[in-house]
Image (cartoon, rainbow, N blue to C red; front, side):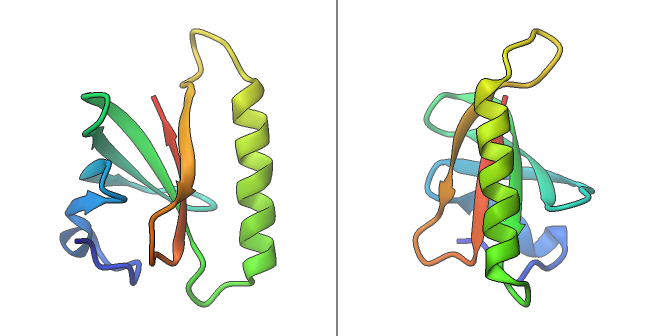
Length: 99
């Protein structure tokens, strides 16, 4: 299982939420973004993770909710589509999967 401390990529390699295998890291402004493999759908996805560690939980929840709502409304061939969102059991991170 993954280290949930928000550490470097070496600490993040592995499976997340029993659905995604983390492959590589990408920088993000409001969250950490990873290239991952969706073990259920057998596809590559972008996995955006919002850490709640040492952050205002209400602010993280608001940003996550706003992004989820906006992404579910988008439908364009040049924009990655919304796949899933949630929180892994026991995790301090919310995620949005895009593909």
